[in-house]
Amino acid sequence: MRTLLLLFVLLSSLCSCLPEDESTPEPKLANIEAQLDYYWVLYESHLESSNPDSALYFMQELKKLAEASSKREWQAAAYGAMADIRYIQGYLGEAVYLYVEATNFFEKEGMLPQLANAYNSIGDIYAATKDYKTALSYLSKAKDILIYEGSSKEKAMIYRNIAVCYSELDQFAEAQDALQLAMKEALAEGDYKMVSRVHNLYGAVQLEQRNYEKARENYLLAIESSKSLDSGIKLEAGAINNIGEAYLREGNFKEAEEWLNRALALKKEINDPTFTQSTLNTLGELHIEQEQYAEAIALLDAGLKEADLSIVEESTETGLALMIEALIKASAKGNGPNELASLNKRFSTYSSKLSTYNRKLSDLQEELETSSKQQAVQLATEKYSAASRLEASEERSQHIKLIAALLLLGAAYTIFWHTRQRKRTRKMIDAIDDVLNRRPNPLVQQIQGKLPKI
Image 1: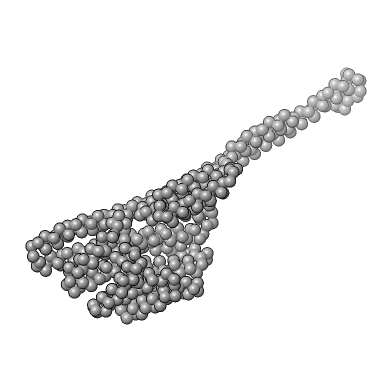
Image 2: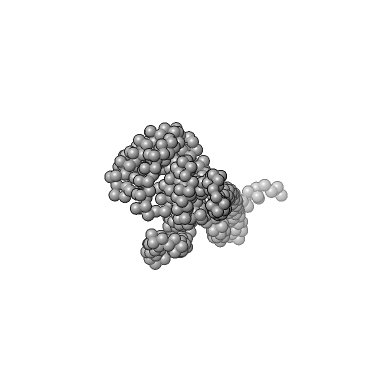
């Protein structure tokens, strides 16, 4: 029995050496869900009140609490929310890093709608820095999930985003295919805001191919779709602006100016400087085409005064490029010395601003490239580490099984040896007892029968 007890102790100690499950048991914390909900409400309220720094602080606190209580779904949500904040603040590299961290959680926890949204956001970031091929790779991942898991509204959104990238890459056939799918899903959902946006983008694709009439037809359909919406004025203003641009590209300056002025009046009602700047840019371009450089400079200057050069915006980039062009052409026209000195001074100012903007864009592109490489290395390292841990665990398990088998064999042999010894000892005791009690013993008789008789 002592041998068996010893064997049991050895096997128990070996089993205790087996690698533990990596998931730690959830600690019993009082009102943990209420605390997490409270932080989330604070995050949302501060984000809505345009206070992203405070929103980020509360989300970081939520993440700490979620980690301490092993609430993996909350951890995933925290990474996604922090990524959204950094995206809003213009820290695109950090935003991508946080989104990728979020995707790791979303994938492991089977949170597919959230995973698709994260991929879509990453795609948007790369598209903002004009890396449309990388953007497409992430948007395609989102599409593959949303095809099975998403609503018609989500599908329409992702198809439209994919169409934008194809259009920027001059892959117009692919862009139109994606737009047809987007329109189908938007109509199925009854989402006329998306219907208007799809018509607008379809018009832009036609405009890039110089199909001016078809472009204007789609812009008019965008206006018609937007009229049924409570907040359709912004969509309507955008489409009117695009009709003016189509006339400008066609060389019909009179019609272009009429439509652009209509768009500008609507956009001023909305009071969105970035949105207004795009129309001022197009009007500036119109005046450059007509060699009315002073008017162009005044319009472009009005748009750029509201621009934030620390944020990558296509309208800012376009405005700066047009301003440089207008200043160069105005200087070459042969103005007086005083006016020429003023133009040169403004040229120097805007050249510096354009350099700052281009440097910012370059820094963001480099930051994203570095972030992508770091993520690739990190994922490869994690994969290798996981494989190594699994291999080591399996090897250790095999060793433990081998030792256990050897111990069991040793125990079986020990039991067998002790049993055999007990039998021999019993026979000897019986023989001695027979001799002492003068009883005939088979063993003694057998020995005596083999002795020679005297």
